[in-house]
Image (tube, rainbow, N blue to C red; front, side):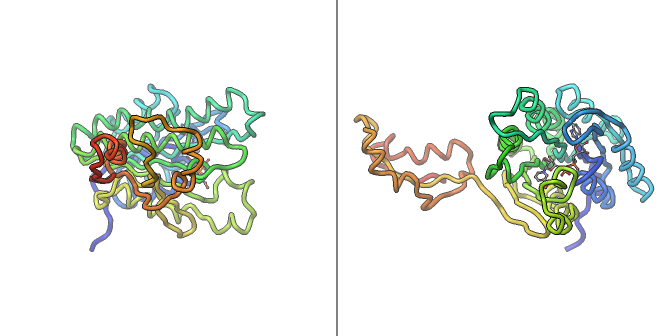
Amino acid sequence: MGDVSFDGRVAIVTGAGAGLGKTYAIELAKRGAKVVVNDLGGARDGTGSSASAADQVVEEIKAAGGEAAANYDSVASIEGGKNIVKTAVDNFGTVDIVINNAGILRDKSIVKMVEAEWDLVLAVHLKGAFCVTQPAFSIMKEKGYGRVVNTTSGAGLYGNFGQINYSSAKLGVLGVMHSVHIEGAKYNVKANTIAPIAASRLTEDVMPPDVFAKLDPKFVTPLVLFLASEENQDSDMIFNCAAGWYSRAAMMCATGTIIGDGVKDISVEQVRDEWGKITSLDEAKVLAGGVNDSFGYLTPLMSGGMSTGPNK
Ligand code: NAI
């Protein structure tokens, strides 16, 4: 098999002025993609803005013989998202790939968090993924091709102290993935999500220096590029990745148990008595067909005992 190529492809990488996004933009360009390097250029908490972060990455790509255009809009508004996609269309004629990567942090424990900290973090991570994906998706649908890679976090998938805003936003990003996967299926638009761990300004004060030193963002880049490539035929998947560790994570649904017959009342005591079966993850499955698959579990109640299982 040959190299994974992005010749003729146009990619948007949000938050590509630093950290993980910068590595994606540079590697995509090296492999032939024309890249929109989007970055607001603000501080880690989302304050301020500057053109220099995006400009420097564009210069680096051009100096290496690649093609790139800078965009300085915030991902966090519909107008910003449209401008980012317009930058791709104006400079390179289309968009094939969106990597939703831009991010900030405003950590506080639950009681101390104020409204602005909640709102801005949700706006950048969650609304931002929607705002950039929406205008790109209409182009992808039209042309019958697209690859979207979103960025969640272990904090979103599994939780973390002091990050109720970030955890909630990052979990929400999975909703953006599911929708693009389902609505894009017949147009060859695939969406996947990564949960990276990497050394960057977002993590420099939360990791011990020896751990930080081993978490070069370059170890996340190959997975993101594969997911963004034509060769990738998988969609609606979530991956942990850090320092060379790549593993799939998933939202799953267990078989559980059925109490009653769908007619008679169910008591609190019956739920208590079945608690072991209700909490069991036995035979848990990914519901590949989306929410409709969950109705399969209700079949015994809906059709007088006939069971066809969740993934019919
Ligand atoms: P970083 O701070 O180095 O890079 C993020 C970039 O996004 C910055 O250049 C920043 O200017 C840009 N940005 C921020 N707000 C923006 C906005 N509204 N519009 C456009 N650009 C904006 O951080 P890092 O670590 O590279 O993070 C990349 C993504 O990976 C983020 O979504 C982050 O939440 C996620 N992530 C990172 C982890 C890590 O261990 N570094 C862990 C889990 C998730």
